[in-house]
Amino acid sequence: MTTNESGPADAAGPADAAGPTDAAASDRREDARRKQEADAVVAGLRSWWEGRFDQPMRLVGVTDERQAPDSVVVLGLGRAPDVVTSTADADDVVASLLAGMAGDTVRFVCREDSYLVAWDLGVDLFRERWREFVTEDGGLCEVADPQGAVYAHVERDTDFSAETSRQDMLLVWFG
Image (cartoon, rainbow, N blue to C red; front, side):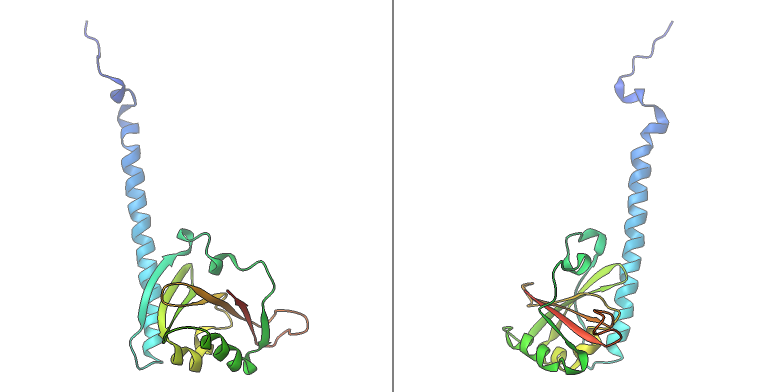
């Protein structure tokens, strides 16, 4: 009579031994899918950029929002904005925000699909054409210095309050 003297490693059996391998393969497929999605987001933004600006897009990074669960851009702010003004009259507010920044570059973070996209922009470009970056359907955006120190969060909203309903408003939260 023979006995199986195999140890605990064989006790799980061949079906269970394949489990971690299947999970790893599934993780790799999901990572590849997310990479393709992020690449598509970047390609779309690059195409949009090249159609509007005569300078290269300085992409800093793309982060899956699921990898940034604490991001204010994802969560929103739990307080009233510091400034609410008509977008038509907001150039002075944006200029004032940018005047407080050191250097000639602003880091702009926005949400595109389920990704956070960060790129560096010249302060003058942002001052002149901020409406193209802070769009009505873009949600909350972040304006920071190149090291990531946040100066403000901005958002355009056409349904902020009953008083401003259907008006294009710029909302600003400092710091």
